[in-house]
Image 1 (cartoon, rainbow, N blue to C red):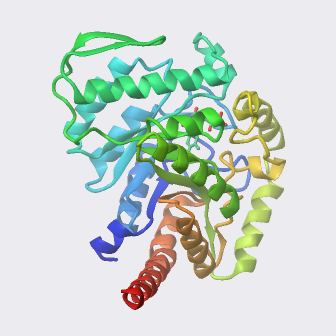
Image 2 (cartoon, helix red, strand yellow):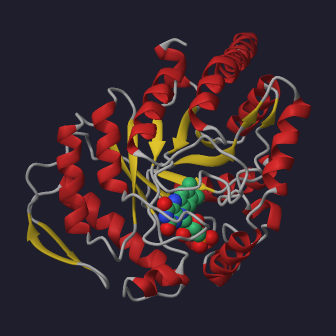
Length: 373
Ligand SMILES: Cc1cc2nc3c(=O)[nH]c(=O)nc-3n(C[C@H](O)[C@H](O)[C@H](O)COP(=O)(O)O)c2cc1C
């Protein structure tokens, strides 16, 4: 894959398995492991396969199984140390993190990694976790109002000297961070959800919007909504969508793997997760959040990754990725059952077809433009 095609093409990220149990709430045997040693090997394999980003998770206590959870910033730093190209996204939860600590921490990691760190600001859906660590639990839209202030403040600290801010959640007085991050204007800021509040933050302050898996039509509706609002706000935002990828030589094999994952679902943990996520978008005024319409089967991949349907042969998957791009998706966030070997298979079998289809589409568009001119 040439560098230029990477730059123009849809981008790929993978979930860092920094929590135990892999990406599915299932007792199916998995070769994915949450150790640093496994993650270092995975990061190198992903970098080689053509992935540009790796996304860590932040969990303070078990949420969907995931009994053990490594912390996101320090784990991201370790992955950066093991790699040379990959950009690593550290997941950040306002509340536990104060923006002054985060801004300083990430500025330093940016220098150490030579400009390869980014953040994913998450707003919290898991009340039990907040209660366990003695953090006040805000109601849904207040959490997003705090995330918005958090992002505004972090951007301000990263880009301005003598930063002053008087918000409801954060106050800064003539504060100057030094050194500032290497990346200009600042490390990229991702933020996720699906509710009205999550989309409004994307349309006003985030560089990237992350959402759960969904159908192409479902994603299109979100993209259209966000991009119309972003345009009105004179703000630029890009879109990333989650997908659990099961790529196999035949469609039957891929579907059989999905059936097996669901057959072995950890029923108790899926139900507990299903109850906990009622605190997410279902607790928002419009009740349109990430998991508002998720079935039991959907929840077995805890970010609705089966719904995106990147399950089939390499060609079927590539075609569906190109269809996502056509409705305005800029990045596909991937999860896999047996991470290392499947990331390698994806790089060898799926990605080249995606680039082929993108090139063919670009050629058709160019011909059409020439005909018009
Ligand atoms: C791609 C992606 C990654 C996320 N990572 C985390 C995470 O690491 N920790 C966490 O507590 N929440 C995480 N979230 C949850 C979101 O921050 C948010 O709380 C959730 O999507 C509910 O959004 P809603 O209230 O808009 O429906 C993630 C969401 C998405 C889409």
